[in-house]
Length: 336
View 1 (cartoon, rainbow, N blue to C red):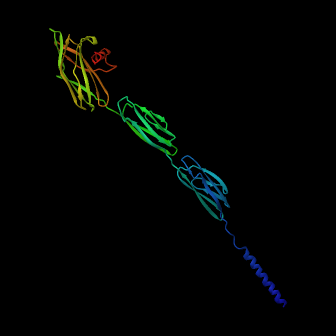
View 2: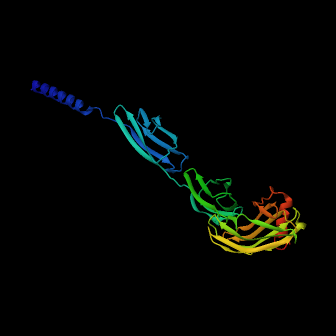
């Protein structure tokens, strides 16, 4: 009986030993825990920043991609300024493994908008103004080229280009640039050339009556593709370059001329007492683009006996002898 009791005690001891050994079991893996990983704000404009914030436990190292690199393995913040919408990944690591979490920073692009940019009128006479008018939204800087410079977001300004000009409006902010153009064209003016029939223009001098005379037509040809109207063509014969020496004057008349067309005035005869030395013509009118026609031609009469010839040239303000310029003032209506 005693031996049986001893064997029972031995069996119970072995059983207890096995039970204690099984209760400890294998080691359990404990990878990192990422409690949070956020971006604030989640949306930014170009050039602005967002702050990444994280909270991690049980990690030996942490890293964020997109060029951020290694960061605190517990908690921390990092400022980022992406140039496009970007997904950031936080990776937390220890000996038992790794965990990841992501957050997104969205780049919101809100570039300027140009409501309108116009030139009124779009075609002008030389030295007349055109008005540029514009309206821009959401711009930090607005400029117009060709000498205008920086302007307000909404406004207008007058320009007087000397040649056909394209103006470019540029609106800018941190998110981009917008451009618009407006054209201003210079209207052409009629350009008239002069000829005579017969050619060359010949003068007669009658010494018996002391008279200078000539009979001819004036032919005007338009060469710039612009129609118009001549309302007077006054001619004058002068003894000298003095308005007071005029011996004869006659209006050759006027009329319409077509673009690239011709207008013939005359024939008429002009005559006066004395042997003239200067012949002058003053034309006045307008063209379809609104330009004033005010032309003057003059020339000295060269005499060979009783026959005279003249070579005309245009009178140019500031270059032609002022005495000659006064002859045209003498010939024009209201000045005679």
